[in-house]
Length: 409
Image (cartoon, rainbow, N blue to C red; front, top):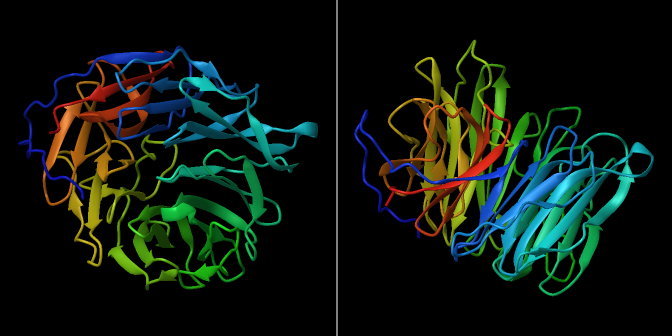
């Protein structure tokens, strides 16, 4: 269950203590992070614009491995997952003849295997791969193709098995999750004449796919779909934009193969008008995390001329809670989610990266992740040990750094 152990921090008070910072790279961007409950973690990043993808692994004792080059030049947009067997990273890579392809690499006990190409190189547009790992060690990668949606699944101790989702066409955005027993769920928005609906399909461990199911109204214009394994099923969240200035956050849940009706989490989540899109994690829109039978969703919305993070939670068999704010001041970035339902978001105070953590109930606390006068941007977060592991880009130097922010109970 989602813990409720952090204390409310009064506005204007200190939080922390400040975390020790580990520099991962001198130059880099887009540094997603994944972690496991035993303290292991992985951070991956682009070494430069158009440069190779690199990664570093954190051991349970807190020691970081040297940075490791995973790809050749031209690779971009890495994503990571942490399985019981080790870290896995996936990214967009240039293929033969200037075409795009997906590459994946796995780590075990600090050693990375050579990258493996998935699917068929095609087109020149990014394939936007996503990755997820299940508790049993099953890892799934999904990416868009010219014809639809490619998927590759690796069972514990096995090799990659490639497939495509039957009935998936004109894929715009996507996400993937791995549930109990190796059940894989894929969700995607599709561009059709009447709008951009949200669809989902399940892949059973034997390789059989369910027919795509539409979770939205056909006229909806869906963006930022997210999916996560929750208990014996899955939860999905997404946004619907009725006009340029407003977004509606929606969600649906399932137990096994049966999806329930979609519900509205926030009737309208207006964005601050006239302001540039704030920095944040590699993706925008709602975020979603799960811990056993409980789930948490979060998003950034306009508040008082700025941005503020809101969150909701849901326990098995129950309804989603009402939205509530995270932190005691406006945020300056999109929320990042950490497995276990922790919500972390960027908030700059005195040029330091301040992480606010919201848990089940109404408790909120905070911790300092970066030193003062460091302009941190694009943070990602995951719970590790007794704190929250945060990776970010140092806007002053262009480097990538990580720290474990503690003090959030």
